[in-house]
Structure formats: C-alpha cells, structure tokens
Amino acid sequence: MVHPAGGSRPDGSSTVKGRTADHWSANPIASRHGEFHPVHEEFSRGWFEEHSRFRYEVFGPWMQEVAGFSRHRGELMLEVGCGMGTDLLEFARGGARVVGLDLTPRHLDLARKRFEFFGQPARFTRGDAEHLPFPDGTFDFVYSNGVLHHTPDTGHALREVHRVLKPGGKCVIILYHRNSLHYRTQICGIWAAKAMVKHLLGRGGRLRDFRLATHVAEMTDGAGNPLTQVFSAREGRALCAGFTAVRTRVVHLRREETTVARWIPEQLRRRLEPRWGWYLVIEATR
Image (cartoon, rainbow, N blue to C red):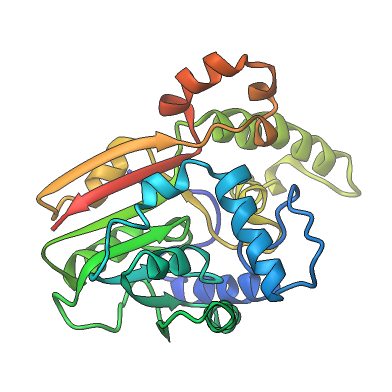
C-alpha cells in the first residue's frame, strides 16, 4: 500500500507534474540545504565543487557506496530525475556512459552546465518517469535518488525502469522511508502538531481545513512541493514485483534533521540507522 503525503492521483497527475516541475525550477534540488553555505557564486564551477563535497561528506556519506559510482564502468546507464547532475557526474567519472532524464527544464540546464564545467560527456533529455522515452532493453543500469516518491504513480515508474533495463540489468532506487524516525516524529509528530496549532490560532482557522498531506509534502521538500509519498520496505519490494531479485535496506539517520536523534548517542544512532533511517534503498535485477 502506498501512502501519499500530498497532491492528487491518478486523475490529477498532469497537474501535479506541472506543479512539480515549477517547484523544482524555482528551487533546484539540493541547492538550498540549510547546512550548505557556499562561498562561491551560485552555480559556478567552484559552487558545484562545494556542493558535491557537502553532499558526499556531510549530508550523505553513505551515498557513494550505495550508488556505486565506480561499479558501472563501460555500462550505459540512465538516471531518472538527474536534477543538477550531481550524482550523474560521479557515474561519468567512474566510466559509465550516462544519460540524464528530468521533468524540470531548469534542472537539465544546470546539469548540462555542470558537465560542461568538468568536461564529461553525457546525454540529457526531458521526460516523465512514468513514460520513459527509450526503447525496451536499452540500459545496463538505472539509478534514481529521491525522485520517484514525487511522481503520482510510483509503481508505474518502476515498471518503466524494468522495461528499459536489459535482461539481467540492475537498478538502484532511493525513496523516502515511511517507517523512519524522521517521518514518524519530525514530520508527522512534532512539526505536524506545531503546524496544526498555528493553523487553529490563525484567523478563521478550522481543524477540518488543516491538511496533514499538504504539511507533509511541504515539510519534506519545501513550500510549493505538490506531492510526496513514503514507503515501507515491504511496499518498496511490492513496487518491484516484476524483477527477478529485489533487496532493500535503510540508510540516513542524521541528528541535524531529526530532533529526537540529536539526543541519541553516536554508537546507538549507528545501530538504529538500518531500521529507522529516512531513505529506503531498493536494489533490483531485471
């Protein structure tokens, strides 16, 4: 069972997708993180270098191992929702032949700019994760990080990933984890209660007008984000029912993002992360 946290599906999917593209055009993904304080001009070569260091050394030290940037040399790979091309550039540096797809034109412009700065080849195309514009059996590897929980029909998007993979091809898909400390306490607990009180105290506020779904969508990726979904490990495996082998794991339990986690000793935090982390990693083989 999928648990939507904002937006409409499936009849309003085109509206949601249009609003999603508008949201990320105004707020390029991962460029406005509260802990990221660059010293270089925005979207300059130095800024992109700073952004990568922050992403892999501060925000997600687990990311390089999970993504496997150096494990796909010579393979033709697709990133669904490539954003500013941050991870895609690492795959290219690792020797993969890379294709980046995104719904948001602004993302694609920034990804091209990043690749030009660092002299790496890539092919970019605008497209919808639920209707990938590629023939069956095109890619050796498909990657998508923090994207497919923002499309109305995540299950259909995974079926598209399966379709464009070659027989025996692999994918790594990273989604928001419903059974995470961040979601359970920070988003649906502490901050939802605060948002509800603020709503009720506002002029003319009524309890029935408070939409938890809207609150959750905005808490995950900012005001104006129209759709966020979260998935348990079981739900993630169900999304990949057509694959021959599916493995799930959980990562990312950061003190900076979860009030409760700030009080957990480091050794205990590391033990809890595989159960209560914010990201669900799905590794599957066609």
